[in-house]
Image (cartoon, rainbow over all chains, first blue to last red):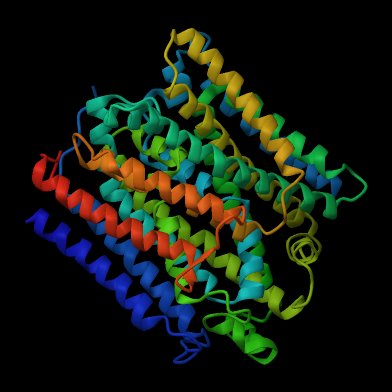
Length: 70
Length: 470
């Protein structure tokens, strides 16, 4: 199960990155604004927060064991 | 101002002295000196990683980038840093697993062991030396020019540089990595606190975020969208920058070493998301300062804008704290990188522990002198030079990734990384063009590297056994 969630999270990050750079971050796009914040700023910020949340989740369900030190 | 400066510097230097004292051991082995006992917990780990990552380039470069290039600067650093921390979850595990099996002295030594080839170690050390020395030098130059501009009658800029390097040398030579980790923790906290105080002050003066945005729209609406008023943030530039930054822990040894010396995998993972939160927290106020600058000082030079926004527009205690914060930010990155060069050199040495320890300490001193000399010749374009440094070191990422994924990594990775690195260096010294098929060279090299590396790794995967499915 943990492996499945881990792979889902990796897929989510890859898709989110591709969608962000290819679709969301368009040139000369200021609107829609959010509380006066231009689109690129708030959408970039939101994507960053989502990635950190995914990192948090990934750290909790990471499916592989701690390597032993030699 | 001077009395506040003396007050804060005394506290700061006192804390550094205490960190050195705590870390000092008379009969320290070279392993303890270089790897800090390999017992760093999550909180210290995240602070040292963050302090090494968020340098003066963040403190000074990013506000100026927001001011002159616009809000796309968030994608350049904020977004790419959070992607990097996601990579840490897997990379930290894979690197530690490989290090546990083969032994770890430094990334260059690890590469030599994994590839069974001295050249692999030299390649890693060479790329680190070539690109970290200029990066450290621009940091030192940046802070010294800033201090020289802020206090023109106090000291010349080379004297500020020398003071910084001497402080760094003293505590790193006394306590080794452990002293650096403790001092990074102190510097990380100071940097974050100071940048928020200044950011909030700037935002208040600008009338709040919404009002600031409205004023920027009136003065230069180009700052509020991509590619920015000067057209810098093209998709190619942002994608290439993101790749370079995401690969920092893979290709820059000071970060790889921090992952290996953490207490356990759980600490590495806690550190990863904590660095992500720190990244957002430390970059956000630089946007506030930058927007304030776009309103108040749209035409000012970088040095004028920074001295005004960070010093003269602040209350005196805050300005003095800003100087200490900048000093701390510069110090933490500088010490991490110079110490990493010493670590990497030592990982390539064979000989007695005592001789290696002596050689490492001498090499750190020599690297510091080289950095000091270089810092007098560098230009002032902090962010763009930092990006070149990230791009240069990232060319050897396939070598490191191959080593952590495969038991016997394909040696062809050494060849493609060497060719990419060589071609990139030739473009920097303008022997070959910095474009390929009409596109920026860096993104083209990344494309070729990604394709060839994937093909090589897939081919290898089906003919050799990997360490793990992860």
